[in-house]
Length: 489
Image (cartoon, rainbow, N blue to C red; front, side, top):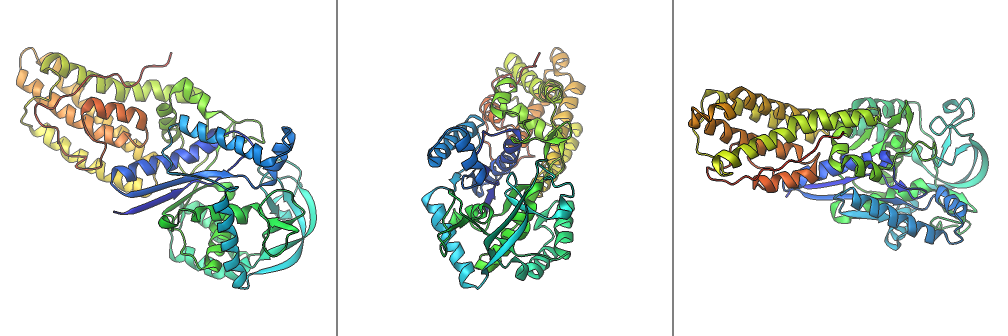
């Protein structure tokens, strides 16, 4: 079995999930489902970052004297939200867990023994929203470019990680392994940043009341980013990760800091970092701190989970920013999912029920079917390549293309008309349309898995990635009619 280990960033536990965090998790879910369909040994990890200043501030704001109790209550809400969105994650890590804390100390010891930790003083600008020190050239107006909040001037004694020591090695690895950071535009950004030089990173903060204690100085606690990144090592059996998913605002932490940390501690590097864009509203990043967050659970209750997943990849090209629109979401559901997929499924399955006792009829294909089979094979191979390359928007477009071809085939053959005069020709078109439905359901399944299970049950097929482009349904195979989606008024 081929191993496939994929991670999302771990999300701050200072508020409830929003559509942006659900988007990243959905990318991981789509890829995980597809790799499981192929039979790969898949592990999908997500979770919560609970050791940040933002979490302690949120706990205090809500009247919690015990920050751990606040974190526990937030973790319950996140886990419940992800269950309601039917994510298939295999692990949910919390950075307050005993095992994570032990892993952080173990990892730090390796870096410390390497001689890559020293004490120094930092003076500069700090954003609490990003939990990151900012350079003045990146914030000329004194505000965080992401959160638009004033940066704090800080001077304090910290412990540092000798990140600059690994600058050349990081750059060399990226240039020799172009798929290490994807897409190309994000890789170029990281390379250009590295070529400007690299400073050492502060990895501790003094006098914090929350976070993991620093092993060599009890007055300090770990800086949240050094602590958080180590979560990815928790399923030891699956390391290294095949894919780290991350938003573009945290690309430097993963692509540079995390890579340097792993080099220092002597761990194998992950295979790929995939950096996606932001969900925006009116061009502004969706963020809890900006007050424009959308609750994905409520949205799913209104439009259905699968409709939202479809919209995420069909309307917003993965890797790029995309502006969220409820109007566009509704149009995609009505004009594509219902019109191009659900109606096709119901039309074919109900016609079989009415005229062939719900069973695939015997048929001998003609030239039209044989030519279309060649097209289906090409589309499936294209889809496979796109999924492997995390070109999810393109892969969904390929699934839509196949569904459109199937609709065109049925419309051209008009079995509802010819059944009266030529039952054999109607049988051929219904047999072939049933085979196309199987292929379509398998291509759509990673993107719309909830209805995919319903469709597979009605078709009497397994959701396995095998002979996807071939006509595998035998004559006499039973299919039940079902309306998968309904139009939203």
